[in-house]
Amino acid sequence: MAIEPLVDEELRRYVEYLQRGMHTPGWEAVYDLEAYKEHARAVPPLSVADFGVEAWAKYQRQILEFQPDTVFDSPITRFGFGPRLVEVLDAATRLGQAPHRPVILATSTGSSASPFALPSDGHHLLFAGLGTASFCNYWSKAFARIAGYLVTDFGPQSATSERLHETFAHHPEAVILPAKLCAYHAALQTLLGFGVVSDHPGNPAYRIELVVAMELFILGHEIGHFFLEEKLTSGSEQRAGPQAEMACDQYGLLVSRTASSGLENWAAFTGCGAYLFLRAIEMSAMFEDKAGEDSGSHPQVEARAAGVIKYVLDNTAQDQLPAVEAYLSEYKLICDELQAFLVSTVPLFRH
Image (cartoon, rainbow, N blue to C red):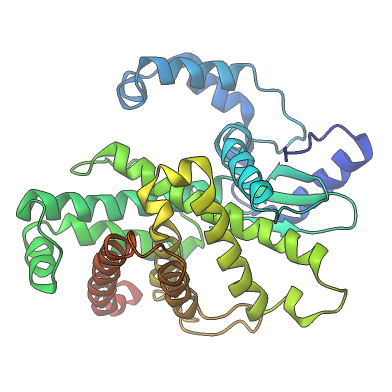
């Protein structure tokens, strides 16, 4: 199943109307295509070093040849989320659980971490953009940095509370970055514009693995809403609310683990990308006054994260289960210890 191109003029105008409505004031520069093209033409030396020559050339070509579908269309959505969404839809098709109605990918003009799914009787609309991309990118760097310091300090040994405390003490930047991300998110409800963050000391390839795992799950979750919309009768309580969110989490895990890059990506296959995304959402909320509240439409993030672990362990082959369980247990410990530290810093940031 492929992503449907946005070629119908009436539908294009409708998508643009929705984009104007969900737009977050103050972030207009994010959708300035000319700024992207200027950046691509400039070829900053640091960007080439980070990308690699071939990857930078591909990026230049994509940006300079990009033709937007709407005034808000972003190359980040098309070239970043587009390939991931194709993988998710292909996996859903192989599993016999893909939505039948066409899916259109459009740029989200909201700045929050989550994409937005709009099921319909005609075309399903999925909005994703820089708000999601930046959240996944920054938090993957934070987690990869902690993992990198653990390897630097203790080699291949498993994480323990004692080793984590020692690493946090020796490398304060391992916890300062997550604290800054949480405080920034509490102030602006986004990580857009946070600034440049180095991959050091983590492996950039591993950071990308975490980003891909997060994005596959997030997109799979939203496709789950389309699948539920078609499968369940109108008015069914399972189509919305906490029960639907948990069902879509399971759907997202199923398709992200089955997607081609998911099978080659340990963080995706183990559900670690999904787990880390949800724990990052939970930690970000701690710096806000509404932390811990249940919205009514969504279950608490803590319950969703626990649900990810349960689903993965219940649906992993016995010969793979010990390795998957060990990997998830280590990241659960990392998140628990990191969150405990962040809890102690919340009063400092609030005052």
